[in-house]
Amino acid sequence: MQAYAKLLLCSLACLVLLSGPAVRADEEDGVPSFKKSTKKEDKEFVTKVGAAIVKAARAKPKKIELDKYEYTTPKEGRKELKMTVIWYGAVSKAKITSTINVIIDATDKDKWEVLNIEYKDDNKLSVFSPNTKKIQELIKEFNK
Image (cartoon, rainbow, N blue to C red; front, side, top):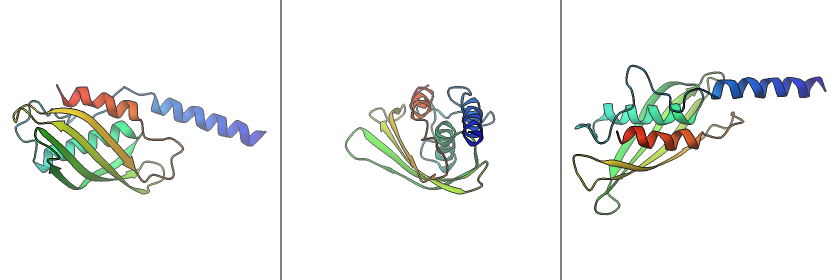
């Protein structure tokens, strides 16, 4: 019974940690805009995009680094930003790899619009799945 109480207490503590603002972004960098930026294909821009998505997906990622990225054109007027982001768990210190696909309407070459974000990672230590609600809320921020 005591182990059950500890598990319940630990679960409640995790819920408190996860109940932060809807979209957490680095105060220094902010969430980049696909509509306003003229440097959407630069590594610095893509790094900020990847970091914002990982921060939305997971509670407290540390040392977020862009591993690789590429833009593809699956059909006319569309772009896909495919990236791999490496980060470390705050508690476990484990190295985690995230695979992210940002689907973009690039009909207007100057004002891209994010349509969807697909996110997966290899974090086997967390009892929680990536926060898809917060990830999807980022779409509005990317389109400002």
